[in-house]
Length: 406
Picture (cartoon, rainbow, N blue to C red):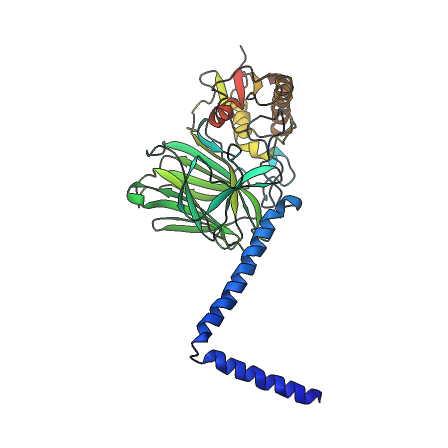
């Protein structure tokens, strides 16, 4: 009896396959229905994955977190990504010298989407393709692409980017990712000057005209999770970084389409990838003498959220300071921390003082600069260099200054 049932099942299956392979008018409708059902299930799974992310630990820990009340120093980080092959012991001095990113010092555009309503398209962006919305995950605001493909641009005056500029952003994606993130620089006539795509397997792919490269992000086994992405332009030269690793180093990006006039971001995956904490700034122009004017203002020193712990992302600028001190043994410096006016003034003042002291300690203990060559201080939010009314101004006020002692 069992054998007869199996035989009947095989006959039924064979007839069904022949029917599906025939030119039956209903075949297309059935295939479309099946495809739609599968697609709807995949989309629902992607939405559930992102919406539940706030209740789960990301595949890679965050690299930049939302600030607490009174937490206003520039570059605060909530942790480090899995893709951190350099500086794995947590020491600033252990970060590879290939990681030489120093953020610009004049903020042109900054957005963490806090000023936008959840579910809405953000005010400071332009839409080219797709559907985007402001979302929230683990207390942070993100810009999420809810369509399978989407392209957005920074809402800025239509003019060429400055000679020296830097771009930073945090990216979050879940599997399947495909080529989930593309950062593109566009020149006159809409031509692509260059574009960088992640992931390309476990690599970042870069193309500028006939120049093409794929460079692996070391220390990871899968591309999903949170990553900090950075670009630094110095004239026609461009460097690209992810998670304290340099993945792009191109001497001339102008040959194919000239110099870029604007930047675009493409999010291309069914799993709703997201970005946040985007910062575009002018500078930094390499200086022959970084303290030639007697003072250096930097935005490249980063701290753990709510603490005075100096993070390894600070390595490039601290390495430059230590080299300067070695070349000028007679120089002594005052290190001063500054914040914006968000939070309690007393808390900001205390934190700025502790952070300045931490910078001096790292330079002394990890970079072998004598401790008696530093004095430290903090001014909190009392010495603003820009208006605190806008995010760009607040970002300019969060800084660390080095000044020569007389």
